Image 1 (tube, one colour):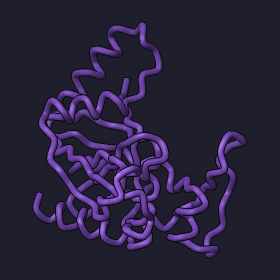
Image 2 (cartoon, one colour):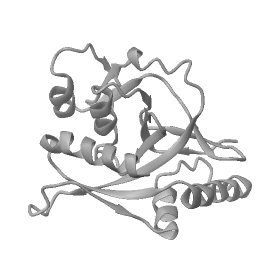
Image 3 (cartoon, rainbow, N blue to C red):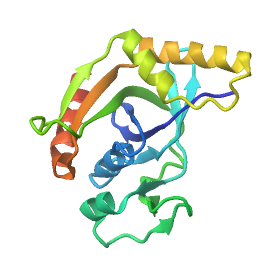
Image 4 (spheres, rainbow, N blue to C red):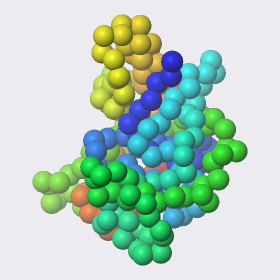
Length: 198
């Protein structure tokens, strides 16, 4: 009875900040980049939405991150113990008990950044944030929503209504990124500046 997005999220002073996008485009890496600055990780890979009457909220999940070796090396080096995620991936799980989200409770969803990598464009070497229209935001959300049973018409209708509300009430922005882990500090600063303007 609840909707979920394929997303990672962090807790900020003004609420939850979520990252959506295709697998391997940096959702977990961005959450980890904020985590090392002291921002609690609310979830990695699955963001559970709560459709409250006054605002859209998210529910924290387990405290941990799943990272590829290159991201883990850049952000944590060899200083953190890791666990295997599954036999199907070389990603490793990094527990983040310092996120201390067990007592956080539901967080208002403040903003969603939809990641877009510039793998083939070497001229793009700085991150850029672009606003999306409600229609564009809705389509981005549909692409990253979990749909377990496509024959369940009631579930699909409920999901579309929730995603429509999120697109109308929560700013969804495209975050264009160079495919370069070296720009993570610049990406963090750009996001923090954007959050201060919201």
